[in-house]
Length: 217
Image 1 (cartoon, rainbow, N blue to C red):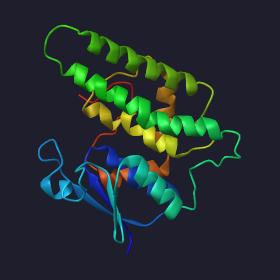
Image 2: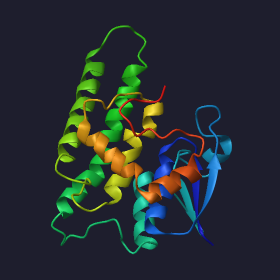
Image 3: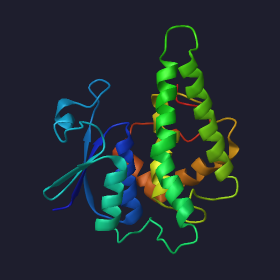
Image 4: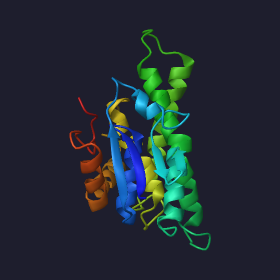
């Protein structure tokens, strides 16, 4: 039985087919349309969390992006796209691998909530959310000034994790990257990866990829 990836259209589960394409792992892709915004009932029934991504491997059903990525890489990919403790860039890899979901994704989420605030005034919490979001982008742009990939010269799962928040997430939380040249160059490198192109064609063939400075209209 092949690995099954359950992908909710226009969601962070796009990371998982991309990962498998990078690793050259066979998988079965099952896609689901939003109903109308959240996951449909048949997707929510897959796992108690009811959120994307979800994978199945034999009798195993697993959710959470980082858990799915780590499981696939080590169970099916021979540990590829992870750096070992003896690698000089190990600490950098470890930091950015956790930064993507521990710092940046929450910052984008807080920005989305701030943008949806219809009060007409900017609360302290909204101000803090915007400041932390800008700080995260500045840190990422600085990191990419002298590094091709987040861990340095080698593409890793840290890159697989961070890209959704810089691209597809902007359908839900629109923001500009106009001021961040290094991030934009990074996204152009991502867009040229054959595995990324192939995965996105399979996962969301109708979706316009968000690799430029401005969010989709």
